[in-house]
Every structure is written in structure tokens, then in C-alpha cells.
Image 1: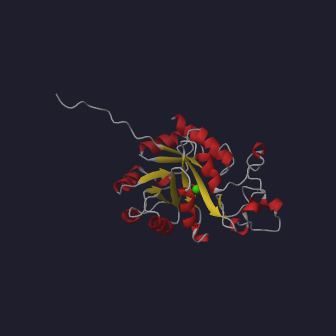
Image 2: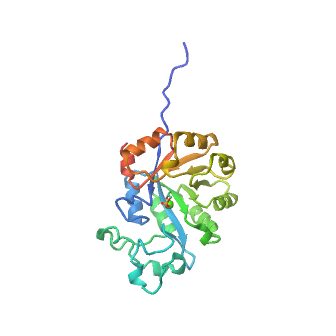
Image 3: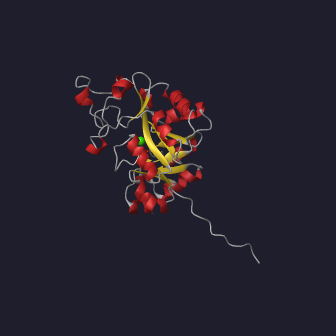
Length: 251
Ligand code: G3P
Ligand code: CA
């Protein structure tokens, strides 16, 4: 008699709502984050930057123009950089109407406002430091705010030296580099990062295996169709960053 054969369950793919459930709600608003959680996301992804008066706000672009009505509210303030506005000014903006009038009145959230929404839920946070080189010292603010809330958080950036510096500041953090490092670079990256998060086109089965060999995880972006999600799962991606967490949840 041999040992009983036990089928090993495939690890569940992490469902990561890109800028919240941003297919159906205005990206990086609390409406999109709440919807992402309702749709079954394990993590919500968002982008963090800093206002003129030092508050951390959630926005993808480094200017306010595309996703708010800033051009109407402050017509003389082009090019409407986040870093040139106070939080009080940014809170006057409508961040929902551009997507759909039914979201009129949605505001640009702060990081603590998002953490307050996530704390009572099971969902965690994948926080992208967007262009952190524009905001010297933002890593200290991020670690302080994440530490103040009972929310599982991971931090990623396209700026790899910044992630390396974050590791020095926060040895236990879960960290990811965005982009597609060369296979020869993976050993060095594995010294400070837990994840390599590439665009889905780079995530071939061989590439995913190479990253896994260095004991890092792979979260791919941005994947919105069921067919492509299945393909990435077959290539052993650990997580899928999607505008449509409901589609991934249904698989
Ligand atoms: O999380 C991955 C993805 O958000 C990176 O690209 O431009 O949407 O921030 P982007
Ligand atoms: Ca992002």
C-alpha cells in the first residue's frame, strides 16, 4: 500500500481590480474601489501621488486634466499638475462625470479614505507609487499611512531604485517592480522585490517560469477578456490585474 494520492489544488489566481473596477466606474474613485470589492477582487490596485500640501491622493496621471473637471474649475492653472494643487482645491473637483453622469460628485480620494473603505472588507491593496521621483520622501508617508490601518497592502512601482529604497525602509513589506526586467536582471531584483509585474504580452510561460525560479510572483496587466485570463492562468501567472474583476471572478 502506497501513500494515498491527493490531488493538489491549483493555487487561486489573485484577482486585482485595476484602478478599482474601472470598466464600470470612474478609475481610482471610491465608487470604483467599492465596486471592485463587491465584484470579488482580492486586491484593489491604485496609483498614489502627493498634493502641494503633502496629502497622498489616488490618481493615475500626473495631472488632473483627464479624469476631473479641473479645466473648468481652475482654467488658469494649466498644466494642472497634482503637485501644484492643495487637497482642498482637489476636493472641489468632480472625478466621476467624465465617465458617466451617474457618477457626478465622485471626489479624488486620499489614501487614508481608501484604507478606511478597505479595512472592514476582505480585500487588500496593491498600491502603485506613480512617478515617485516627483515626490521626494513619499515612501516615508506611504509606510506611515499603511502602518496605521489593518489592511493587507503591497507596493509596486515602475521606478525600481525607488522599490529598492522602500525595501531598505520597510524590510517586511510586500514589494513589486512593474515592467519586464531582462531574465539576467532577475537575480538582482529578487534581492529586494517579491514580485515582477509585467504587461501580459511579456508574460510568456517561459518568462513566468524564470521569475518563479527566483522565488518572485508575477502579476500581469491589464487583462479584461475571459480568453486572455485563461491563457495567463495557464502560463501560471500568480495574479491578474483587470478592469473587470467580475469577469475573472466568474472563471
Ligand atoms: O498595476 C499595473 C498597471 O497599473 C500599470 O500601468 O499605467 O495602469 O498604472 P498603469
Ligand atoms: Ca497603476
